[in-house]
Image (cartoon, rainbow over all chains, first blue to last red; front, side):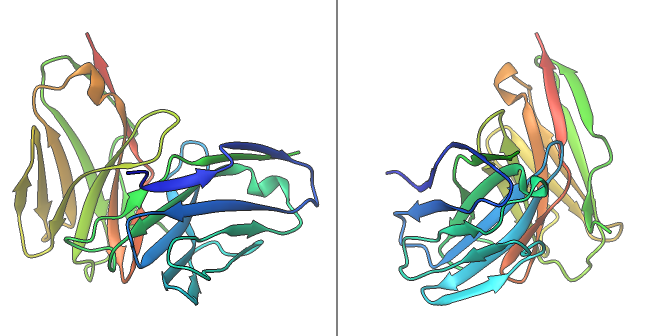
Length: 115
Length: 110
């Protein structure tokens, strides 16, 4: 059982480049999330989705875009990468709204450096 | 400002001792709280959760205590082991989302 799978694991981008972080889950979860984690800090929500075709902004959405064309996949797009986007990115999913009985499971993370 | 925070950024304990990690929250409407463990280079791993209508919940070697009066959450780890060394985050739900605190690094000395 793979759970939440993220690719790539590591990536170096030049300022102004664009890229997509891939996320897939095989647990038939409805809810999916993208968080970023800066060094020594907690996780901040970028975008989330409550089902295919539905996405919504989190705390720090600027500079990112998402889509949810299928239940399984939730890619995160970085347009015009900036050094401030250097961070570790975590994708997560849950069956229902993050609450008792609907545990949110995280992927292993994608380390992104913008130079 | 942060609605979820931690009292201590680092905690060092002796192997076999009990560990207590604290967390304060400010959103009185939060009805669900979770503790995650994050090992170096890995994603957060669910440890235990608690609803706001509960004061205490126990798992395997872990106990979460919730004091709604002072908006305080704690994670107790019994007989701490070297494998417990990690950063521990508390989080509260805000609608469909989780809001995380900054984390506490637990170091277990042999």
